[in-house]
Amino acid sequence: MTHKFMVGQTVDLTPMWLRQAAAGGYEIRRLRPAPDGDPDNPCYTVKSMAENHERVVRESEITLPKRLDPVFS
Image 1 (cartoon, rainbow, N blue to C red):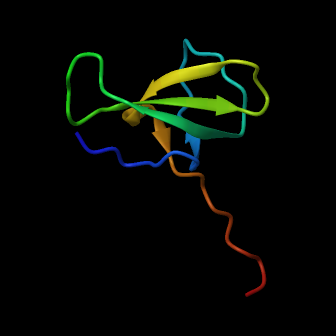
Image 2: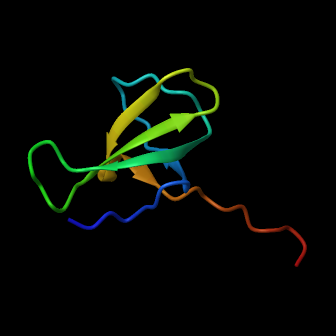
Image 3: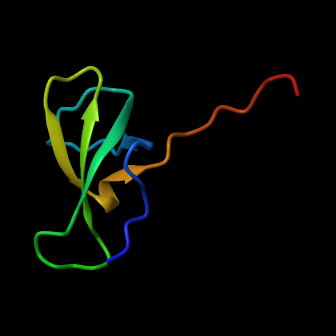
């Protein structure tokens, strides 16, 4: 199983209709195996600075943060 993201990396949580989550970045805290053994969708423990608890999410539920292009280059 190969994880796309690394511990310490900041990611964005994909918005979902049934999930209430703090806005902003989430730090990857731990790499976890997928509970169903799916090698293409491993899990992560993530934590937002705006929340007191950690979350376990699948790789398909997180993305790299969107970078804003500078107005003046």
